[in-house]
Length: 367
Figure 1: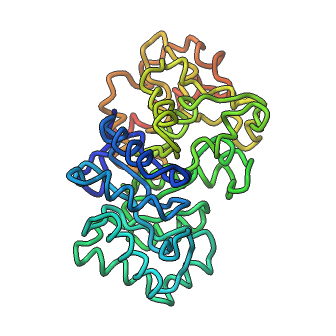
Figure 2: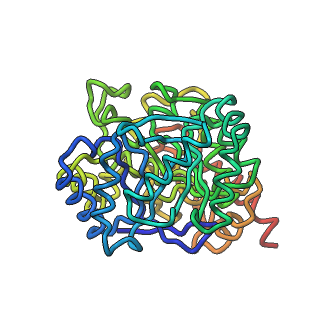
């Protein structure tokens, strides 16, 4: 397992986490086995917005004696008290549901308390009007909630909550279908979505990724808009390359499916290359680096993807990005203008010219 640090904390979070959308369909023993296999594999980040109430009792049993090994995303607004998944902005319903979840999980604290599924302006107004926002912040003051998060599919609403300066983690759907305008939750243009990722990186808000495979659609050539089946490793790498991303949460239903996701760590850089998606790059994204590293290896040894990422972040005012760039062993100044990157870029980025632009931009900081 590889880990990334939560900017607003000291927690180290596994780059592969685990969602619980479908595992509740399994027998309790199978759920327990899956959770414990995940823990043994180094997975320490779990999202509890599952499709079935049964997951909570199974997790409570699986985490017995191992609670400190796991960080849980618990959603304020997801209601399981009826035995099935429901959604509510009513404060009393939320309180009952949170108490119920804590009881079943056999824990007295929540690592990440999430404002649940906030996709519309009316949702935010309802959470505020009914007191749910004050409640979750009060729970953090009491130490029951350690970090506040937000789950949403809408860049506009994510930015609204980021403006409030209350969250440490954003749960957002990141995959090439959504980023390039395909699918039910492809909300916002590619530019809006990429700017959101960069804003999170700049402001130290981590991103946990939901729907990385789009319910398996990206893994099936017949269902994928790219008319090509991506692998789980390609989808995971695509999400991990986005600024701000800490963890990618697939939703395995059992140990076998979890093992398939974990094969990511046994793949080569070439096997993780997702540049095939360039076949559906929207016009607004042509010529923009997506940090896929398909242009690698650079004959001069430049990490072209990372140089581009730091540049894009610096343009948004990220001071740390400037510092990270200036400490690189090789920078844009070391470009030998061989044209290798230009000829290999599937997104038609003029990298050779861009290296000159990046060099000139950062020279004013190193003088």
